Amino acid sequence: MKTALITGITGQDGAYLAELLLEKGYKVHGVKRRSSLINTDRIDHLYQDPHVENPQLVLHYGDMTDSMNLTRIIQETQPDEIYNLAAMSHVQVSFDIPEYTANADGMGTLRILEAVRLLGLEKKTKIYQASTSELYGLVQQVPQSESTPFYPRSPYAVAKLYAYWITVNYREAYGIFACNGILFNHESPLRGETFVTRKITRAVSKIALGLQSEFYMGNLDAKRDWGHAKDYVKAMWLMLQQEVAEDYVIATGVTTKVRDFITMSFAHVGFKLRWEGEGVEEVGILDSVDEKKYLKSTGQSLILPISNLLNSTLVKVDPRYFRPTEVDLLIGDPTKANTKLGWKPKYDLAGLVEDMMSSDIQLFQRESNTGNMLLKGEE
Ligand code: NDP
Ligand code: GDR
Image (cartoon, rainbow, N blue to C red):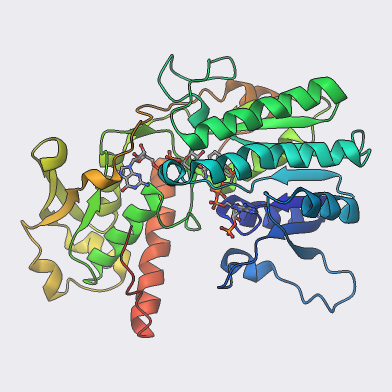
């Protein structure tokens, strides 16, 4: 039985990866942070009572900013594979907490690599580093591949640039099997609620169910190469099963504007939008509703508050969601991963939207039925 250690196991990717590795028969150790509220929602279905003999999943308290803690966990668990997914992963928030971001995302990676070296595990432990398409930043060339130059555009991306290069350096200097997966945006029903896709699918679902009437967005023209997290965690695992450690771009090769993701999400519930105005004045207005599609996606016939929304503004722009420096266009070239890893995604964008929208509609139907509607403001 192989042993894996996942940092960031409570996050979107950590949850899907833990599930995949458990299915493959791994013993999985996960690092979770102490928080005042329980933060294991995404992996609760995988939880095993620590009192059973030799549980397949074990959680350890830890933090990427605490090197002694990380070293001790690695020493205790002696992992065959480490997946370093933990990070302050929100690009816009990294402008507010740049020093912490550098510490957790940049130095945190060094702490893992250095622990493996100090413990003499260079020949045993393989390391996956969660690198990102944000490294490309300011567009130099498209599609972006393993050989495209980097130009990071946020404290997050700069911290991840350090993590990228320190991973390469420890591979070259000490022969550690360490890979960078340069993953383009990947989403899912488990995506954090403040990333753009999930913010959209949540808001659209609430509007469709008559629980909300409008929402605010930032830059509608940004283009992203969006895939499904379930497909992307398979690529992480594949990278560590190779003979030689290398870096790989993981992407779909298709790019889409934020505005079009909104349009597609509304289309799922039969809402047709028309876009009017420009820049911060741009608005998305409800043009018509396809009642059959609405019934199919929500399981209910058109309710009065929805019919009343015709010709009203559902989407507005708020400059507070604009970033000091933006990444305008990401489109990845996954040829190397396709050919060397045999990796091919199962989901396309339509499948992703479908999965996220159906999940959020069910979520809010359940919550409104139990009278447990979230009252907190949407970010
Ligand atoms: P999430 O934000 O969903 O998860 C991040 C995880 O890191 C959470 O488990 C979080 O814990 C944990 N974490 C944050 N800070 C610390 C810390 N100081 N110490 C320990 N744990 C910490 O991210 P994703 O799952 O989407 O992404 C996984 C990784 O991949 C990240 O490194 C991200 O930067 C990178 N990435 C993501 C892409 C994407 O599109 N999703 C694309 C490319 C790279 P908690 O639950 O307590 O907050
Ligand atoms: P990103 O993801 O910054 O690409 O980083 P995010 O979903 O936050 O933004 C994507 C694009 O949408 C634009 N945008 C908005 N974004 C948010 N969050 N909220 C809004 O209201 C909004 N309106 C427009 C953004 O400006 C941006 O252009 C994600 C993270 O998972 C990183 O950790 C990861 O490394 C990269 O993807 C690849």
